[in-house]
Length: 287
Image (tube, rainbow, N blue to C red; front, side):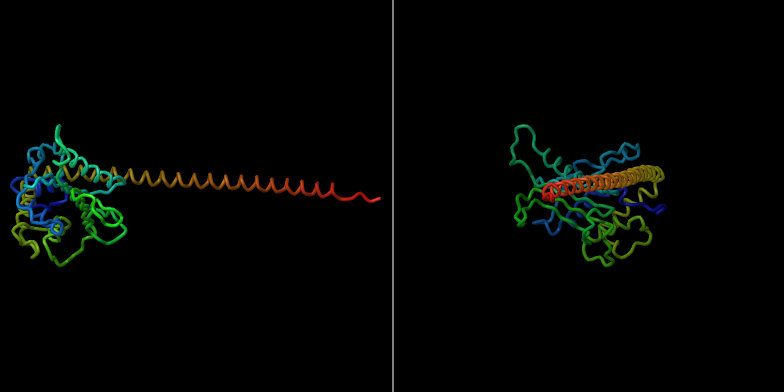
């Protein structure tokens, strides 16, 4: 390969899992990630928004997630997210709900709804409370009873994934997406020598070795860098604004406490004065 290619860059990600000529990679990825939740392996899928290399080369690629449907009508959404932000959980839930709700057309009822599953690969940690790199969310009550099997959202936190020994296909895909920009097709490590991983590397090689594709890849990468920079500046501004707001609020509370203390002190003085006057009035007059 002439240049290192990061499979997490959205256009590469979609070419890997959303191109018709890589349909078997999408099928392998879905079975690997959802393995323990599938009653039987998925044997066939249709890509609903296939990767278009012309849109990529023209710089018009705007929809970079992958949507697919299997023969049972189950829907799948796969998306890569490089940068976390405060409302990312809301976005994840909203996009799932949007795909699920759009199944029904005029005249159709709820019986036509099929399970919808969303898989998000996150370059940054979203859930910082534990070390688990895979989180599965489903609709259950506080006793674990399932309301419906139609919802499933998987979050895969690549930053937390550090397995050195690959034990299954799920781990193989996660390591590929995490370290793919460090790989070279001329000397692949043992864990990358499967048929699917070699095919994935051939997609990276296309972006690396074709100058037009590589320049378009660089442009996309620079655009995403700019977006991350803008988001970072926004986060810094928000943190500074929040700190200033908290400081002003603390000052306000301190002044309010001082005012109340003064009022309480004056009230106590007045109370003592009144008590003294009452005592003086109650004293018998000697003489």
